[in-house]
Image (tube, rainbow, N blue to C red; front, side, top):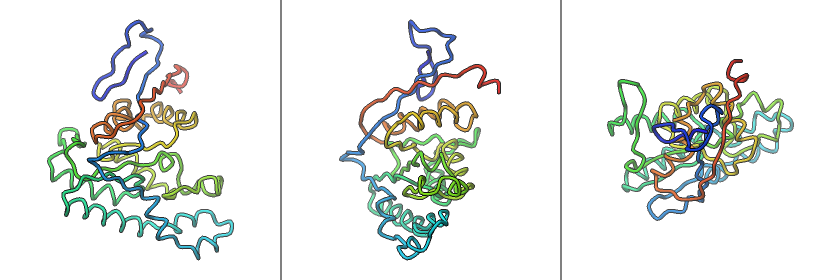
Length: 239
């Protein structure tokens, strides 16, 4: 078994080095901190709910995304971003879903010289920045086209967005701008999804280790360290 750290993968003593099992840590946190102010986009978007549209949806489930619109979410994000910078206040925003939100962060991190031009990715010291964000795992697992099949089962807040927005969430994780993946409850379906992300190389092991644990730690959050084993089946890798 191998332990995946922030910048290295090491074999765990007294375990089989050929068993293709990787051990990740996930920090289950309640976000309590006297150093960081935390904002949940889900709570702020509820205040801007388009109730009339919600009642008129009937079975047009994809319209749920418009009940809590992208425009409203982006406006909330911009206000929080300006609040942090204007007041020199360290904040963390939970539940981003939009490419444009992360592009704002990208520009901010680039001005702080966190862009590594040799690899065209960011190496952000999250203990030093005023604004950091996480994406809910549901906004990685699903996309707008899934409303037709799943219906109300994927009525999450913030809503599931269009496929290109979901794809953008992966992009910004891999570029090092999105600090973390927020998982309210690390159930088996979530673990299986993360395993499939690794197998398909949508997220690389070192990157996943950062967004599940080490970046949370850098932001100064504390919580319960939960182990997550991912076993690479040779047949799955070869497919």
